[in-house]
Image (cartoon, rainbow, N blue to C red):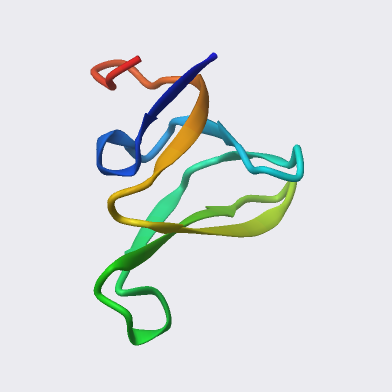
Length: 71
């Protein structure tokens, strides 16, 4: 597990939210709630639907990177 820049997260990465919820990023939505300084990591899978908002200059916990991601 590592803390990485929000900008380094890729689709397929597995993240942990502050509340402990884990998600596999299937989509990254930019401009969350119309705010250019925010984005949202989304898991939309048969297992769960979860959206994790984050500031573009923030950091997140990376549990499992996809091939080619920064760890």
